[in-house]
Length: 256
Image 1 (cartoon, rainbow, N blue to C red):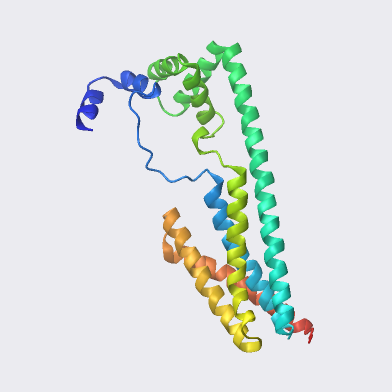
Image 2 (cartoon, one colour):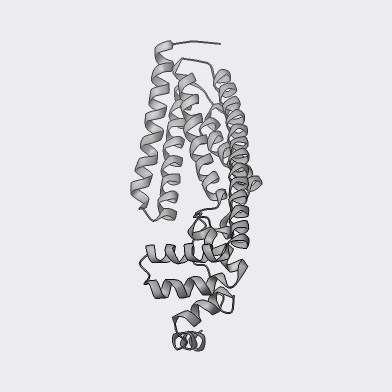
């Protein structure tokens, strides 16, 4: 890597840019995929599944319902929520893909019909980012000399989209379905083995532990601090579960 770096250091900024945009010097990507939808769908699905079903389970249990009613409500909530989350991800991600594809097509047509105007627009975007007018013009001219690079650059700068990190609808939907189902199943597990106060206590413990772990994982990934995000996730689960349990206790619907 040292010879490549040395050669770049002595080749001038515009030559470096020219070589990079033509793929002569591939650069490793050390960043996480923050734009793609799979991780987002998985995290949201697990969190939603946990909070939704621990709230549902405790809400029904708060009404003094029998174990069978809690299990039925929990399973129904798990399946309904997982299907809903997956369908929502599939529709929303595909809609986003279609919108992005349309805007890229519009940009491609503009580059073909008015290349000089698009080059001036690109130079203006670089000037707005603090690049000197001379360098902005030179960079825009180099990038615009390659239609594929020009389209990629306009897509990133003008549309704010990274073409290499587009979410996949099917993967996002599958991740959402599975993660929601797992998150929703965990607080329901005690009710397959016991009922009443022991099951309620076990659901609370499982919900608290999983919410803390999930929050810590999100904090680790985002770099915002494990403890901070873990406490936030735990508080959200506690408030939601506490409200539904209180409502269930007040309504007091008992079944056998």
